[in-house]
Image 1 (cartoon, one colour):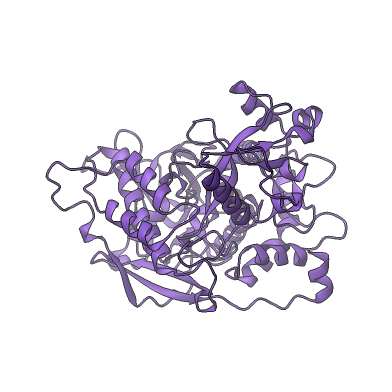
Image 2 (cartoon, rainbow, N blue to C red; image 1 turned 90 degrees about the horizontal axis):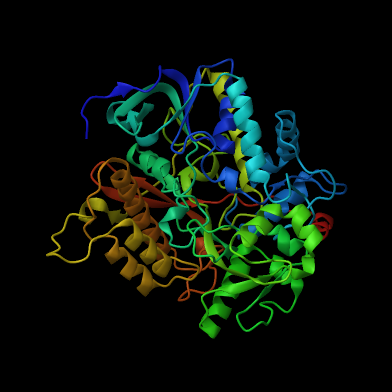
Length: 542
């Protein structure tokens, strides 16, 4: 590794790491008042935003309200949603849609879509099932027009003041050398850790680099055991797996087993929350010994598929399949990692000078299970809220209160250090396959123990970025396994076959912190009680 650090760009007030909807929303909210720059692993427009086929949920239709939207968000979250965060985000959803429109996002005109877990049709789309690509296009154009400096680079680590008291910048790998950027505040917008699983819709860049760097900088993280598996990842043997948007089922598509029978007798159950649908599919696959189920989109009709779902249609046709006439192989696929850096609804972390927005963050909005089409919304809303806070402080991010952590759940000193006598070593492919087996849609104590042992195997030595990515993935894999093993219940996206019921004692968020001695401490963070929902509101939202 080169010892000398070089400047990748001038020091700034705010460094944004990531160029998806969350990061770009922060940057656009700061110019021209603060010196802001963006650095991103895949360059401009990389990450998950551009791949998002689902839309953005907002109460913009007649008879809808942000209170209804918040109620659906909390219902899907299985008791772990922070109600104040849900209220903050849903209250600003309509404003976020309007702002994105002003920035050039060309939303489809006409009927709103209804997706899984929503009591009303409230999902706004752009170009049918290409919402993410359209949002990415418009925001990148706006950032370029605003003159925000952008660079391609991999986040190696955060720069901290002595004692990890504050974040003061970042170390970036530009592909040939290490460079550094000083900043009053670093905003992580690096996406999730979906690449830890063999079957995922997450792009290759989602190896959890921002989350791992935040851990090393002393930030608390939360909810790592909650990983949302999307029911309809298309099984074409590609990595990442293309997604068949939930809106297809809202338009009439049905889920079938390998035997041709419907997964759910009631069509409405095909639009249940994602964890419910994924488990139903996994059970049917297990009963039939099948590797996948099918999405039957023939009821949607050729004209509607071509007009409203062009991305899905083109993806199928690219492998020689006509979705207007043939069923599409699908399987539950790791899609969205709910866990992340512990933040509030402004993006503040437990470390001064460090903020996190989007999928890398754990704001409490999603609880144990994210409501469909709330991800782009969270990035847009909390990204703008973070920018407003930074404007009010002159670019310096205050910390949020930390949670109390008082139990050691893992010690990282054992990982990758013990002698192996020529035995197996842990590479990216082995790690991902073991995560799929041990921490997939269904988990149990025995499988999590096997997974933990696999993740202490010596790690294959790789140079520079591939090696740093693998180290980050091993770190996060071990903490996912530890968190899942400690939560002895089933809740939302976390399903334990040996503990199939939820327990009131576990209505808490697990918060982890990496100590300087390599120990990982854990504590339980109480979830605020939800505001009581009036009976009329509950009926309207059901």
